Length: 160
Image 1 (cartoon, rainbow, N blue to C red):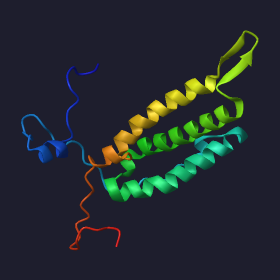
Image 2 (cartoon, rainbow, N blue to C red):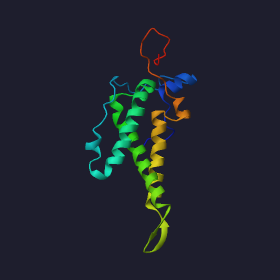
Image 3 (cartoon, rainbow, N blue to C red):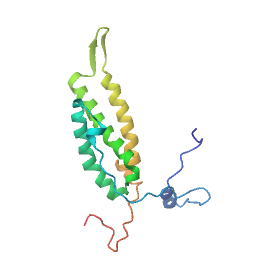
Image 4 (cartoon, one colour):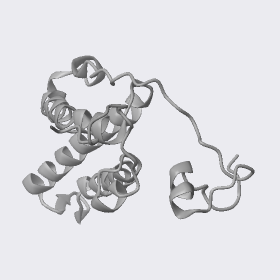
């Protein structure tokens, strides 16, 4: 059952805003700094018809997840969220492609109706927005992500 009231602020946000109180805020979970392992996309998305989706999900993983490891400290404990993001992007891409092929309206025995791909795209887009916020991938949500402390004695720039 859900807890009523506002969603609690992340620990670091309360610290930044100067509103942190140990009796009201907790630091939250800390995960071991193990890099997420890419899933076997052939096992996750079996079948010949899923080849395009597998390729897109693989591409999204390889472009996005290494950047999230560096920028946000994504760990293997959070791997399922990363996989869900890649699948959502791939399925949204598939839905948009089908919409381009078939159009927004399809003809059925009952006449012209809205394509089912419109609904699918809408649902995946909504899920995509949620995951983008969770992972800090939009410009606005990226400002709320605190980069991990790699403990070096340099100036903190990991891209040197």
